[in-house]
Length: 210
Image 1 (cartoon, rainbow, N blue to C red):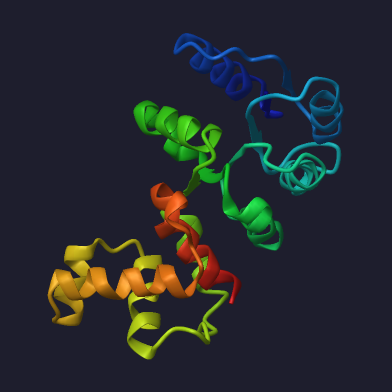
Image 2: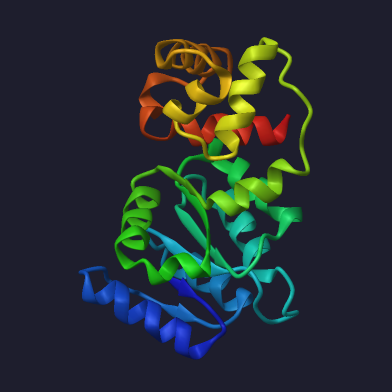
């Protein structure tokens, strides 16, 4: 299900999704209609804009949060031109961070990456645009009590989008040491092995919520 008030973008998303084999059961232009459509015919995935009618505020994002609460586990991928901070963390925190994504619209131009994000969110994964993480990190810098100072430092660098190799070079330690710190972070944040595919993102979300 696609929710986007800009007609050209909405039709473009529908065409793109259908071209790669997805079935779009509804394409709506406002948040109220989105909620009604989901209640009437629950989709496997929602792709929604943030700023939509009726108020042209963050209606799309607020509706996504509402629907995730009403239908636990409902996969939602948010597309936006900007980061709406007030509800972004609530959305990413819903359902334990599973089956949710937040991408900036400019990423849609990278079709392969966008389709990969669609598949990952639909399968219960977590996809967050690096710029979204960067802006949210600036709001939350409180340390996580269970982590050591070095582990908090590693997690903060992960939140900046650094690779393990870059972490090792930045901290003047081996990659093996980096892997050990990351493993400790996952354990202390109670991120089970079953979430292996997106534990790194979930760890960053835990950092943002602290």
